[in-house]
Length: 318
Image 1 (cartoon, one colour):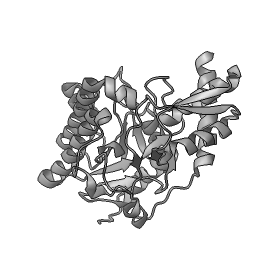
Image 2: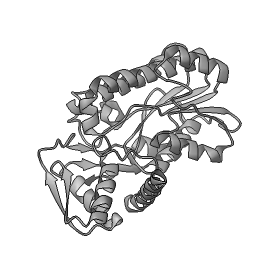
Image 3: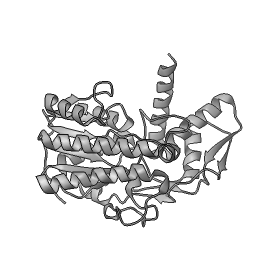
Image 4: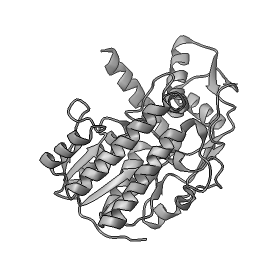
């Protein structure tokens, strides 16, 4: 594993996807690094438009790129918007990575997703398990697009000697999450559901699936800190998992969210809804060897996430 110091200070850094949960967390973390931060909203730059991306890179000349932009969602969104998830994410990865090569970006980080691992891969998930078995069918288009991005970063590194690296964050939560009732991830969905049940006095909240799958959750600002750490210290072909190395059943997690929100009713399970992958725990030994570990406990992170949700809902209502 290569550990090569890379200086961020004074660099022009483009965070692609800065309005999303992941990109906004990276942008917050970069405030402490004395960089010139570049961002571009969708109205300014469509990352699916190849010519627009090349023109933007030519005029802005970023030296460092965090590629956090993606079309994302939970099981339902992944399974119903299959063409959009495949096309948009392939286009974003191809356009940004190629533009970074053409315009001599010094370093790029591509952010993947833990859904790139086979559905029934051994646990915990090691980085070299990618492409060793079939994917979870419900999010296969998204996973294939992310695998293509990882392989593209590898190929540009090998053919053109570009300093492009890839990281694999686990399930993330925190400020800026998507709370859509159908298209959100499990953490945001449960925070919203328990909050609304508390306000309405509902006696029961239904959680999708059986409650038995095990999941690992990482507070998004911890993830951003890991990304900055790896950008400064890591340079190699192999991708790096970013997670806590600990998991919890969805049922245990639901009880913890209910407790943080202050919901005191009962919890039931809609077993007609899909569970997704039975277990998804990342092996974070490579990350630990590079000198980084998560700092925010799940309970503390959920308290911060719930406060952020309340603040975001208040702002939306004003």
